[in-house]
Image (cartoon, rainbow over all chains, first blue to last red; front, side, top):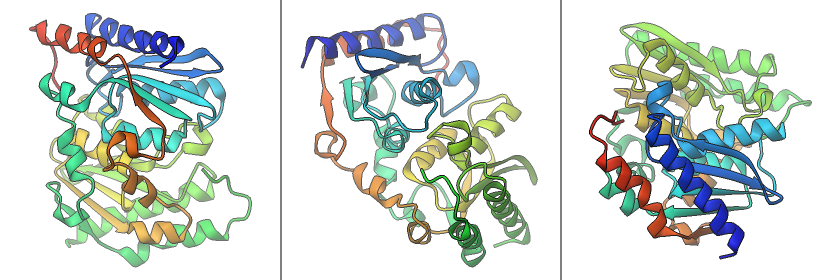
Length: 158
Length: 158
């Protein structure tokens, strides 16, 4: 661990504390760093914005991408006050930063009442074996958007 | 499958097609239905909004929560033109709808160049065995936001 890693993580933890003290949302914070500078610094805002996707990491990724004007976090590092939930981890994979640091682990979060492990256990299951009732219908119709997509030459891949 | 399920899925597929024809983003669409009415209807807008989290399902969840003024999709059903990626599936679990329908499967998406299975394979791995370089630092400091959270009585849980 370098000094700057500890510095940026302390910043993520400070955001988490500010966030709960201001009543913005849950006790989580994340910062995105590029070239030694913080380009996004966000807390969880699920309850104040009525947005279940507004976890600290998702908010920070969205903010950092706005700053960069790109949908990928090339050469960026994400520091999160807590191990990301599966939604946030998926978002991190789509954003493609170069590294991820976290402080508290998922077991620490579970002790505080945030049980991400339920979702971690659901995701690898076959879709129709999950607790969420899930059905596949109109599969052939569902291929049409892909067929049209593949026929377009000037498309932006992501 | 009821007629209305097919109707709502056709709508999700229509959004996916409109979405790519207008150049808004990838060939995906989702609708959220409550009490027989569509309350949100969104496509993927990753490339047009520079937001890697702006998948159709995440956009539709955010929009539907805005309509309902709540961070949960009580008694709602989500229809997606394609099987959700792990990020979207995580978002769906946090939003807590009553059911999920999808048309194309993840293998169909992979054939069109959208390989969500890579992320599906990464998520269940122990954090330090993933392809994304991941490190845990300052774990004890990371407990502080949780300690402060637990001391607050009038907090909104989610």
